[in-house]
Amino acid sequence: MSKKTHQQQLAARKAQRQAERAAERARQRRMVGITIAAIVSVVVVIVGAVLIAANTGGQDTPTAGDTPSTEPTSAPSEAGPDNKPKSIPTALAAPLKRPSALPAEVDCTYTKGEAAAKKVNPPANGKVKTGGTTQVTLKTSVGDLGLTLDSALAPCTVKSFVSLVDQKYFDNTICHRLTVGERLQVLQCGDPSASGSGGPGYSFKDEVFPELKYGRGTLAMANSGPNTNGSQFFIVYGDGSGLDPAYTAFGTVDAAGLKAIDKVANAGVIPSETGQGGPGDGKPATEVRITAATTASKN
Image (cartoon, rainbow, N blue to C red; front, top):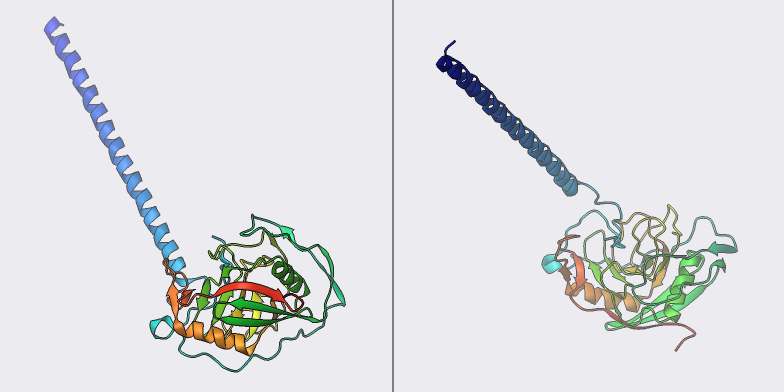
């Protein structure tokens, strides 16, 4: 074989190897492109499913909050014009009573948790009597709200609330949430941070029962799920029929206080910037500031 022929054969094999490598690189590029396209398709499907779920579910359960939420929720209902209630029921709810009375004493436990929105000491753990009522006055920027706390309904809740009042936890705090829908008309207070996520740094168990109904005048605890009670509470000034019996009711609000809240509700709501809760759920257009909270024996 001549030298020239040998060089031609070497050149031909080299060219073949280069062509094979080029073909392999092209094949790999095609496979990468297919893989990326497949991944993108899967991501699109997943995102679509998440968006559908977010837009169709979870309307009837507590979000609780606050971010863990401590907000009572119900199915969305239409507010009136200018984010005001279409109407407010005027009849007071029937007095709440447990179908079966509690024992004469119950054990209460207050569990420390995240940092408090305002420094406060938790109540002492131990037995609490289950009878009697306690009068509390919330002095606010819109008038006095007279509360009657019922230890036959929720003794551990009453003990906590009175402890917070005595420690001036509620003084100079803002009621951060108002709802004006047809099935959820509440004013929510008790968070010194006014963010909807603040609490006293401890929690305690629910004191609920299946027969609980919420109507005009009911005083109840907000929560972020089972057994997460803290300091946030809400007043049902009108319709509370959209609420499940998952929120501890522990007393009532007097007629004069409810009329003051009616005026706040009729002034409307400033909807949340995030749109959470809909147009009839947000900050009261008229500020409700608790300037002081006192029990009957305090001045």
